[in-house]
Image (cartoon, rainbow over all chains, first blue to last red; front, side):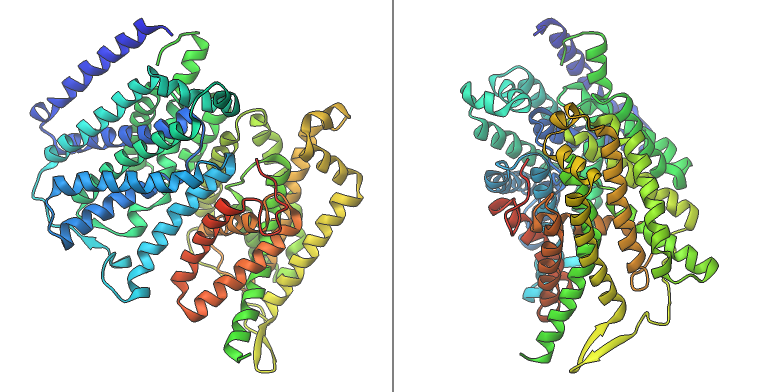
Length: 316
Length: 290
């Protein structure tokens, strides 16, 4: 491993993060600040997916479920039990991680397409359950398709900017830790040859579970923040499969199992959708489809991955 | 046995037949190539639209336009596999999932662009007609689809077991390297398999067109149901689609009758999830496990 380039990248990353942290003081336009916040938000979410699926090669098709659980925990804690925002935020992450732990035990034994479908099924099941629970049991808890309206925060965009930035920062630091720790080597070994890794003494189950629960923890945080930001959630919104798709495509575009991948992919795709999506609304999804197909055919390892292979560089 | 229960059971079996009809192609494509085709619903959509336009322009009955849909989708599937999906054969399976998802987005949205998002339906003389036997209603159109499902399962089995191409497909599914060494052109076999899967899916879309709502966005939910059906029956095991479809259809119909329609969808996914955990090879235990 070439540690020098990695360290340079880390230093650049820290410098940029510090610079970004002061942006709300300089950026006057609310629109621009919101756009930057959305980019950082997606970098973090794509990073959560990359942490689990990018490194281990276990393709999770239902990460959005932990996002949704986070949203619902926060919403229910704040509206039904009058818990303030920050404790509910923490609770969201915790409950997401605990659920991920218990779901992970049976599902992480499955391989390939089976894991992908099981996670997808779990996400869809949770969406349907939160939609139908109240009507079936005649209670008012998830509030089904009516959705839950959270207390209006009264905070401006910069408040949410400062909520999201530290989380994304920690997500990316976790990536750096994964790249340079035994735990991370274990995850990469699972991707390359799981049986061989197990024989070599990697506790594959524990490693996978840790990665899965960690990514669920952060997704729970994002879900809670978004719920508080938007102030209104419905099951079809927070468990929307479109979010999963975004995470996967962003990471894939940037490069799966790389540190820079989610950053590059999420920034690129968010800016594309912001510029093209508003100008060519009707053709936007066709173009996204086209971009996906072209990426897979021309750059199957993503932008960063291809760069690494072409230039024969070893960096994160 | 009371009438409500019997009617629910019949509805479930007929619904199951519909499920089986459009899931067989999904199972075939997965079984041979390991591709989870996320653009599966779009194949159904294209089949249904083929029938719709032929009905609209030439007043051609959907059952008569079914062969056209089959032919059109065979060509479509063959070309898609040959020029797009074949490019990622040697790579991890994730590539094919995402590639087919890209296809799903493109096909569905181009269809929206061409045909708008309107909901359409084909109204034939037999569209709402029922056969009434012992106080039970049996919709003709669904009965025909059920029979088509049985026929497709049989024909597919016959094709795979009794023809030379079928043998090559089975060999490729078992071990593509050895098949290649035995002189099978696997790229061509893959293209034929995808074309075949697309053709029977298009056929199902066509025979379903008299009783379903046709719109460019209909695809995704069919893909999801096909997932469930194929997992229940055993992925890659052809007759499994029939078994999985019937089980799922009956379970959904009973849940919708005795609880409510929303719960029946929830139950679908809970069954799917539990099934994958405890018995990933399907109800009959004959599916392939990656």
